[in-house]
Image (cartoon, rainbow over all chains, first blue to last red; front, side, top):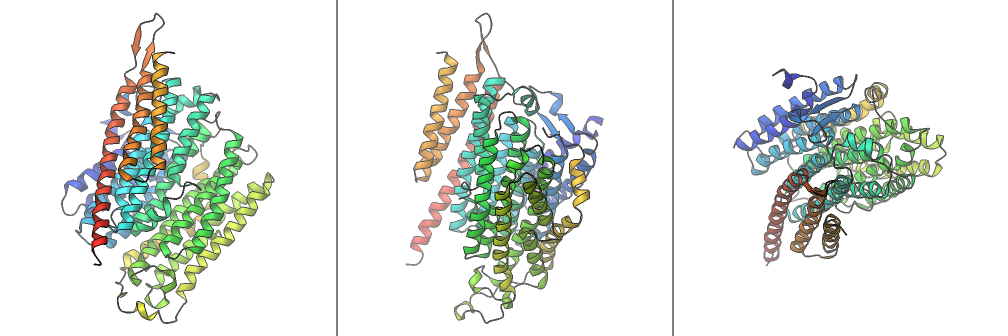
Length: 490
Length: 102
């Protein structure tokens, strides 16, 4: 029994608990939300514990006592602990929002909770697993549950988007798996730590890295592989959009980071980093321009995700530069957590507006049929963080990025980031302008668009995520200390 | 050319064939099948990696890839099931919306 309560066994609990929650939630016909909620809260506690215990040294746990190369090893350093932590936090707030979002005991509510627990299982697996094939299984659980969650809004467009998302995800996973197969042929091991020791910089490693990263890029929706994202994220129900944009994309990004800078670091080339950086820059500009042109609020927020993913990759050339790698890593992690909070808040607030107004066409929205000031306040703060204005988490991330870009003389990068900030301001103000528009709505809109009242829980949960993005602006030093404690970067 | 290499190349060829069809066709059922063929290509590559000759020329088989492929098949079956369900749903919805307004 002591084995199950020892420190490293925590890693196994982080995966098995959400899985148990999903199964219990399916088994209970009514009230499946309660086991799911219990799991979400327990997961938050475990995540805090993990953050605390990885401060001294990384945790390592061989499942069932089977050591690598044959067994599967779970591994957590401060980077994985940060990702688990932000997932647990955003997940908990979104769960609170979902309590009021879905009608009690409707079929969509009964399917939401088990699927969300499965999604959490997959996310935790991806952050903790140290085995290349186990990661593949995690990726597939992630895409299957994410696709099923998108189909909860049962319209024709949502199903189309979900099917496209599924096929794209499957192709991405298979590209990743082909890379794994190549590595297995060469080294006969799937353990990432062992691979990091033995792998060199030959053609085979490069091909494997390229395949694995290409597959993951497809899932992370880096320009030009983002084509599936706007429909899938905009078409899903609001809490699902928040989970997909804030967390699911970050999981595959985390894997790219691990492979590129840790497991197959020798095979990663400067040219490759530069290419990813350039694609990131194009993504920033293209995503922002599309967000400016979007007709609907949720589409706008989804395109903003395309742009924000661009920032993560724009940092790749800096991460490869030994002079600024430390600051660039801080910047990446800050972009990830600040975007998770801000984008989560934004999608939840957009969901409130959709419910209150009955539609989300930007041209027809007026101040009169918007929900109360709490939602709009959340929207504004989250927007400020996405633009990157002080004093928000988005500002700290951008500041670190600009500082390191200027330090190595990457002026083009600094220019793109500043331009991206301006464009973000433009599309955020498109939304905020609606809040002050007191002109009467178009006559055609009047009869059918009587929306529902948005409950207080839904409004406050959006605000809490937005306030978290704001708090990140003040808490930069302690948060980065948590992250820097024992990071292994080479 | 060794047996293992032959099977590896076949696997990669299958993967590429599947990828080509998945990217070029617009029929959903064909795309789902093509993605399954991509998967089979990868599985073949895994199986080929199990086939090794020891130092004295005796055939040794590595059991790990077999376990991996079995898991992979389970994943592929469930993914295909979800994809087919979505295609059915899409078909129902689009035929309903065609008949709806009339």
